[in-house]
Image (cartoon, rainbow, N blue to C red; front, side, top):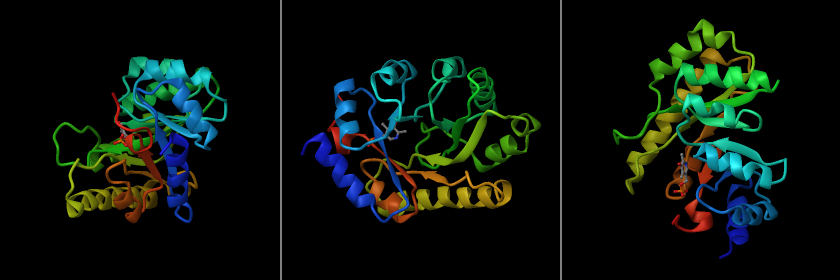
Length: 222
Ligand SMILES: *Cc1c(COP(=O)(O)O)cnc(C)c1O
C-alpha cells in the first residue's frame, strides 16, 4: 500500500467518528509529507523542533503543525510563528514561554495538557493534581496567547487490551473532569489526543478525537 492508500484507508476508518488524523511525519523526508498532503492529510505531527521548523516552509500554508514530543522552553521561539498545537504541555513554565513567544507574533498557540497514563516510568506527563495547579495559577489565568484545547496521553506499549484501554479511560476521565470544572464555558476544550499505530482502534473505542499515526502510514522509521 502506498502512503496515499494508507491515508485514504485511515480517513475511511475515521468517517462517522469524532476523530481526526494526525499524520506523524517525524524522521520522514519532505517528499513523503507532500505525498501525504496530496492524499488529503492536513495535520502533521513532529517531535523535533529543528525538523519541524525546516519542513514547515516546504509545505502549503494550510497544514496544521502539531508538536507531539517534549518541548524545551528555549526552543519555543523557533515554532512560535507557525505551530498550531503543542500536544506536549507538561509545565506552567512551558505555557508561559508559549504565551510570551506567541504574543510576539500576535497569535494564539493551542496546547494540550499531556498526562502521564502509562505504567512505564519513562513516559512523561502531568498528574491530575499538577494539571489543576497550572489551571488554578494566576500566571495561567493571565495568559492571552495560549489556548488549552484538551489533553494528550501515551499508553503503555503493550498488547494487553484491558491495560491499554484502562489507561485511555483514565485519560478520558481526566478530560471530562477538567472540562466540567475549568472549561464549562469554553467550546474550545474538546480534544482527547490518544492512540498511535498500535493502539488507535482501542483509543477510538474510548472516545479519541485525535489519533497520532506514523508507522502504520509510512512503514517503520529508519
Ligand atoms: C512517534 C509518535 C507517535 C506515532 O507513533 P507510531 O507508532 O509510529 O504510530 C505518536 N505519538 C507520539 C507522541 C510519538 O512520539
